[in-house]
Length: 344
Image (cartoon, rainbow, N blue to C red; front, side, top):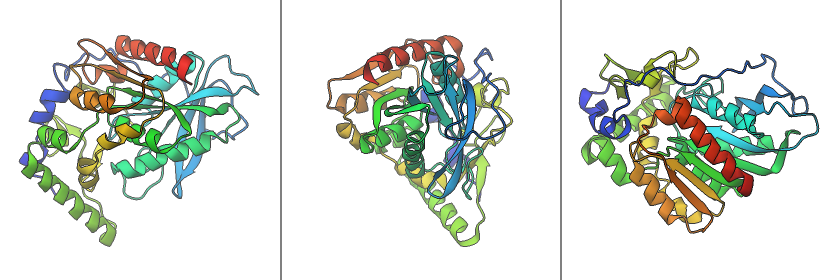
C-alpha cells in the first residue's frame, strides 16, 4: 500500500520541526566509544561501553550500558535511561547523550526498542507508543539486576518523541526517580491535526495504519514507506532533512530508514498530555521556541502538579540541534547533570 502525497506531505510539520535547520552543516557529534561484541553479564562490567541483552514482553532486547572512566567493580551508580526520537535507534542521539552523561559520572543506558535496530520483534520499524512505554519499564527492571546500578536511583531521559513515552513511564512506574526531557515532542489531538494537515488527513492516516496492521496480522506481510527522502514524496519526512540524510549525522548504516505504515494508527492517537497530572517525581524540561511543538511541552509542563520542576528554554535551537550539535548537546547535558545531582 502506498500513501498519496497528500497523506505524507510534511509542509505543516516542516514549518514547526525543521525551522531553518534542515540543511545544517555536518558538524555534529558521533558515537565514539567502541562496543564490545560480546554481551556482558550482569556482574561483568568495565568502564566505557558495555553491550547487554535483556527481555521485554518475550523479545530479546539489545542495549549499551555506558559507565564512567572512574568506574570500578563494586560501584553502584545513579543511572539514566536514554531514549531517542521516533524511528531512531540507540546509535543515534541516545548514545551521544549516554556517553556524555557517563563522562559526568553517571551510568547511562541506551537500547533499541522492540522492532527497531538490533532488538527483536516481528513487525519491524513499528512505532508503537504502548510497546515503547513497556520497553522502558522493562529496561528499569533489567537495570535493577545490574551490579553497577544503584536500583533506587534510576532516571529517565526522553529526547523528542520518546519524551512522550518517558513521561508516561515515569507517571506509571515509581521506580523512575527523576524525569528529564530534551526537545520534547508531546502532542494531543489538536496538535496532531495542526501538524499533520487537519482532521481529515489525520483520519486517513489512522485508517491506513489500521488497515496495514490488520494485513500484517492476517498475512505476516508489512507495508512500509521510507522514513525520509529528498525525492520520494511518500516518505514520512520528505524534503532536505540533513540530520536523517547525512551519513556523518543520523544516516548511519545501522539505521534502516523505513517506517511501518501500521504505526500511524497508534502514533496519531497517542496522547500523553493527561498523565502530566500524575507526575510525582522531580522533572526537568529542556526545549527551544524554534524546536518542535514548544506549545505541547509548555502545556504538559504547566499541568505537572509538583513544585520540584524546572524548564529551560535555549535560544535559537532547532530540533535537530538537540540531537547532535556539540554546543547544544553539551549545554543540555550540563543542565541535566546539574539537575540530577539534586534529584537522583
